[in-house]
Image (tube, rainbow, N blue to C red; front, side):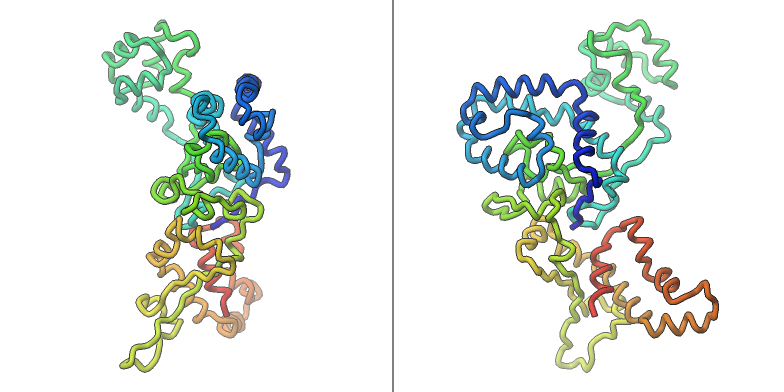
Length: 383
């Protein structure tokens, strides 16, 4: 429901992504891509020479790559493994997640960009040493081996046999002479000096399983809640999902995404029954949730796909009280009431503007972007 507001200098942002995530690997990735592309006429005739043109492409261009790949996929089966190895999301996932965490303020990562019903955020772990010790003391053999990035099974068994460890220093002193695999530095994999964590998923708008070429593309990533990513969207495309046809303006990573203006949320009173004389006064709406229905009005019908995929109508009706609260507040604190309050207080510090802000928190919400903000704005703006 929210568009991602990228930094004004998008080119610099993309360049930073390339450098931060892939570092010195990009040359080797380019070499492998060049060899693979030259060996396959379908790749050569339909996809760019330079790998970065895929990784940094705008979402509108990614859709073209995606649809082209789907159309040609039967001709690429023999090289699928190599394509996946070049566009290796699993390898770079920790670095990609770290990049989004470090840029969470720039991207205003506060609530899910798909549903706006859940907070998502990055945070710093205070008890980082305890977290590392918990891994050392509790992980089973295979996971501990992977975490320590070693191929030496005997070393991992020896470490497990000496559990528990009470401090990082104790662990390092005990095993400082331990021989690790050639590429792994001592314990670097488990004691990295970066305690950042995140409370969000990074969704591939265009499914990486269907098209591995877009697995690493920066504009194909949308920070979101786990419900939207794993339980609802999964591999569906944002568009005509029944036919697998994506639409450029339906991704929060697109500059043309405009759910805010193309969909209106409103509370519709339920018509009174024959034995009821009047409907509910909006000032008391929160006490009678059964008397109101939450409706989605689509100015642009294509946005209905978004509501369907993410079950927005059902989920928002469950949280109908959020809207009813603001409907009640709007009725109780109309312009006349607020003006009377200001006059009664006779204090310049409590102007009409100040009282409205204290009640409805418009400027405050711009800073913190809470859940259900669109619902609140729509309810308050409807006459």
